[in-house]
Image (tube, rainbow, N blue to C red):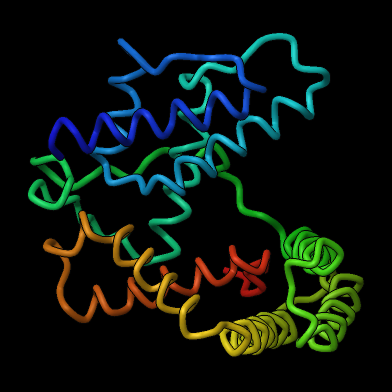
Length: 247
């Protein structure tokens, strides 16, 4: 990635960090600039990096009243965690590395960032989180009214499943997981149907931009799958939809 794109990336991060710190200016210079430059070189999409910063601030606020501004260095674990989730979501865990000509860093495949959450979420906890996000999304108005009934039905079904999930084993557990796949596909189908052509095109272009640094290193069929997964992730974000599928 050339100097100017990295510089622009860092300035975007600095501007966002300033807003998150209620206008208090925390400069991204020196070691902090090198840190954020590494994110850009790894191919961390700007929106993913901002999501990691959001997660860092959310955790900080949960600890009580904020006492001092948050520096970008404190956000690195969360940024890499969200990047790791994004890579897995779009199928980039096979070692695809950014292309230097498209904005990546030359060299070996980008390493898998260390996740800040190594433990796997239990099925009951997953169901509880999904129900909460569905109901919160509807309350905030991020879920289109066109499929309110679908959200109500899915949330109710998941709530019932959560009450039984702790004791579900064997074939019954596999049947429940398969049902979650089907519900996830149904909700996504309604979400896509709610998009107009202009919005759909904008999401596809955003997905292309996020994957641009990796495209040259990917087989054509792998890129098609990754692009579809990236668009799906953006659709979820637009409507505040959780991933109902459990893996």
